[in-house]
Length: 189
Image 1 (tube, rainbow, N blue to C red):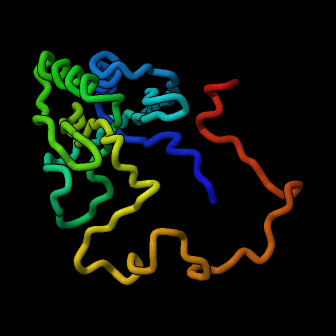
Image 2: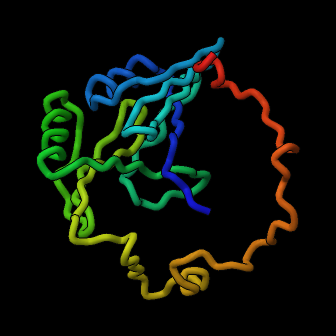
Image 3: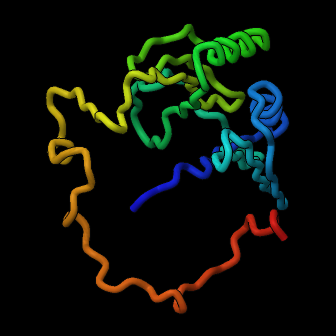
C-alpha cells in the first residue's frame, strides 16, 4: 500500500471564531472549505496543497487539559501534538516573532537533531510544534531506532512484515463496489 500523505486531521472547538482568528489570521492558513448544520459545523484550513486541518464546532466540547508534548498521561488519550514543517530557520523565527507579537506563548528554538522546533498551543489548547528539517538527515532513506530495549515487533525491521494479518482472498470487483453520499458532499454540489 502506498499513501499519498495526510489529507486532513480533524479537531474540535467550542469557539469557531477564536479558532479561525488563530489558524487563518495569525498562522496564515487559508480557509478553503466549510459546511454546517444545526449543532455542528466543520471548517477546513490549508496547510499545504492537498493537506488540511479541520475543526468541528461543537458547542459543548471542552479544550483538552494543558500538558507538555511527549509527557505521559494516565487514562483515556488519543492525541499528543501535531508538527507543521516550515521551509527554513528564517520562516521558523518569523512564525515565532509573529506569535510573540500576538502574545501567544511559544518556546525557544530546540535542536532535535533531524529537525529544529518551537512549541505552542492554539486557543483550544491543542499542542503545536513548528519545525524546519535538518537537510543532512533523511529518516526516510536511513531509518533510525535508538531504543536499548525495543519491543519484539520493532526488532522485526523497518519495512512491512508480510503474513502478520490475514491475506485478502478475493478483492471486490469494481462493478460491485458501493458508494454512499457523505456529509461533506454539499461542498461540491
